[in-house]
Every structure is written in C-alpha cells, then in structure tokens.
Image (cartoon, rainbow, N blue to C red):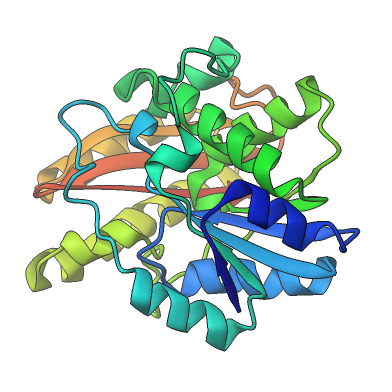
Length: 275
C-alpha cells in the first residue's frame, strides 16, 4: 500500500487509473470502515482511503484535539484489507491558507437534525470532502448509512455541482449486539458500552411500530425519546423522516428513523431504514 501525503504525488500516482474508488475517513478505523474499503475494491480499478481529521466540522466545544489519531494501526488494517493507496495529508497540505471559500449546503437538508444541534457542521464536512474529491478525483466514493444525513448532503452536493462521481451508500456495520460501529464507541466505559445498544434497540422498535401501521409518528418519536431519557440518556432527537430528503413524511413515502443522543460524555448517532 502506498502512503501519500502530498497532493501532487497523489495525482501523479492515480493518473494511470480510470476508476479510482475512494473511502474518505477521519481515521481511528473500525470494521465499518474496512467494509467500505472492501466494497470499494469491487467497483474501482484502484482503491484509495484517506485519513484526515477535519477541524472545520468540529464546533469549538467538541473533541477535535482529543479525537483519536491511530495512524499506524489504521495503516495495518488498510493493508490487510487490500487498500492500494492511503492519502494522509497534513492540515497544512489540505488547508495551506485560511479556507475562505466554503461549500454551504442546502439549509433545508443541512440545518435540520444534526445541523440544528451542530450548526455549521455540514459546511465543514462538504468543504473538506470537496477538497478531497478534488485531490483524488474518484469515479466512485463510499459513505456509511449510519451517518444518513451526511450521505444525503454529499449526494446532493455532487448532484448540484455536476461532479462525475457516483456516491455509494453502504449499510451500517454493527457489533453482535446491534450497536452501530463508530470511532466514538471507544469513549464509552464498560457500563456505558453495555447500555449503548439501547439506542439501536429503540430505533428498531420505532421502525417496527411504523412498519406495522403506526401513523402517529410524533407519538412514536416522543415515546422513544422518553424511554431513552428514563435510561439516563440525553437525546437530541429521534425523528421519522422521508428517506429521499429527510422531509416530513407523506403517506406512501419510504422512511428512515434517525437519532442522536448523549450517553455520559459520548454522543452517538444511528439510523435505520423503515422498509
């Protein structure tokens, strides 16, 4: 596996390939990231992962400095998975000067749910992903459905800006008990880890109720929020939304239920599509 940190070297290396398949990450890799890499290997003629902890998507009170940097372990996992190239730029390489040009997504999608609780988050995500796309110039890129709103925001950005990139959404990787894999799971102590599975269990219960004909979505959301709070969680939201654009659902829409909640000091998110 080639490990490249310079944009010019990266572009030179990738010039021989027609269909780069790209997995952008912030490192501290887990099996969910590796599943994205394995999927990428099937759809491209070269597989590239990136590791870049993007300062722009962290709010001032969030954990940018404390976010785990585990590059050596990440490289070992990527090599074992058969990744061809790791692009791991320093911040000064991706942002050599103050980033005054930014990609500001549609507020109707980006300022609800996660965007309501993390203002400016998706501007930071879109700006960094756009720069990474410009560096890698992939034909296809892979994002997990756990970050469902992020997936839709990136898809809309690619569509609106006519980028020649296919965005593939991959199913959420989960632990045996159902907890969605996340780099932030490592912040949980043993008691919190045992409790954390109740986020996915709560979403599954909401999905089952909606699938079986429960149409009072506000009541389902409220009851689920109250149940989590009684277990000691601090929920930000549990929401049933239209899958296409996270708008308020109409009869017959394909749905998704999304949640974000804090357990102790750790904020977890999850989503489950309602089939």
